[in-house]
Length: 186
Image (cartoon, rainbow, N blue to C red; front, side):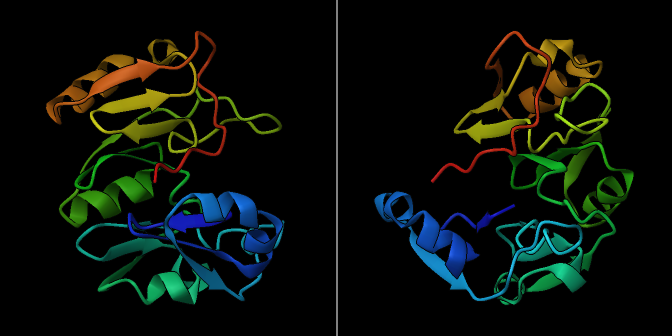
């Protein structure tokens, strides 16, 4: 929610960068600073919560998306789900998992292979459920889950989908899948 990474550079607010400068400077990645303010309440907290494909297709709640991120896009697809990145596990650039039917339809309509999974088996403290993107990260040929993906009701479906793209599924603990906000691999 506080950063956006397109595979080449990180977009973040000037304020967040200033608070974490030492960490950002260690990454060796170009940092693009935004003067736009991220607030605590929805929809003013989704400035950087977007999905951009390598082809330049941006999926987000466009009205609330950072101008810097929108400038990277060749095509903008407006979706109702403000937590677009949180709601998306990117198995590959053309293969996503989501629990949001609106995102599922938007992805499928724009040439991205996608499966719809249940949101009910993802824990997020203080909420009824979490997001699949916040409960996963892709590392090379592995889709890693924060928790035990076998405890998710759609595990078999998810496993089959991930293997279709020559990747393995890794559970990072034996607890219920937990939305920790995802991870960015630079």
